[in-house]
Image (cartoon, rainbow, N blue to C red):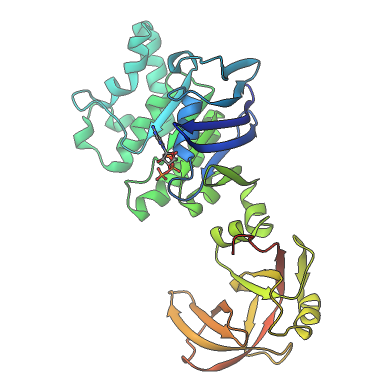
Length: 348
Ligand SMILES: Nc1ncnc2c1ncn2[C@@H]1O[C@H](COP(=O)(O)OP(=O)(O)OP(=O)(O)O)[C@@H](O)[C@H]1O
């Protein structure tokens, strides 16, 4: 197994640059998610890794081998990468067993070896009982497991996934997330997974590349993305939270309650050069401590808790959790137990 690296990769279609100077170092066996809003270039990156697209600048390296550069282009079939798409792309007239074994048939692998390898991957995706069915006789989740098994049969070093759960309902997606985690543990293959669903990326990946308009905004573990976002844009994009205006702060610092109280004492209507990210679990309501006051704008039932949205005296919106509903228009005393400082977005 080898390291997969994108080095200063750019991709332009006609005049438009859709990937701009992207560098990522993917460790062997790592599960990486490419995450970002629609049109940010996730699928284009996957297509360049697969060899479906050439690259305009930079290079893609797999171990010692250059897969793509301005002058090199190793064809898709010579990369030994597995691929799984949201459409499953199964042959309707072939059984599960035939679908899975098809890549080996093309490679003219002997019947005996084929049978053994098919059995191995059937065990990994737990589809042994379904091997004689046709795709039309399977559920969406089972079809996706067939596609997983087929991607694995050629024993690829790297498997590329393009929104493989996008067509499944929420309940099935949750159980498929477990299947993917298990699949990754059992195979140890490097996986690159495109999604626009941050919860899915956080649940699955060891490391996430967050993209915006073809640019890498942050390349971090899920925990770091959530706890230590590097920009206001990423903080807004990842997880729940409010961005509050504050007096100037040193960016990318964790503030405790005492630090925040110090800042709030300096709060006035001109305090908008700093930014604080506050997660809802760090907002305590109806306390009597640091003098921040808000008026309840929304109180939304979420089963295990209420989502409360408050308007602060400077007009900022603050999201909090509360065990019971609060009245719209009610005034609350607020304590912030933790906050993360950010650099404001320049375009705002
Ligand atoms: N063959 C092409 N010719 C011209 N522009 C293209 C081509 N393929 C993609 N693009 C453009 O490149 C940009 C990135 O597209 P891409 O499909 O990679 O985004 P994405 O993040 O995967 O989006 P989505 O989540 O909606 O699938 C878009 O602006 C798209 O219109």
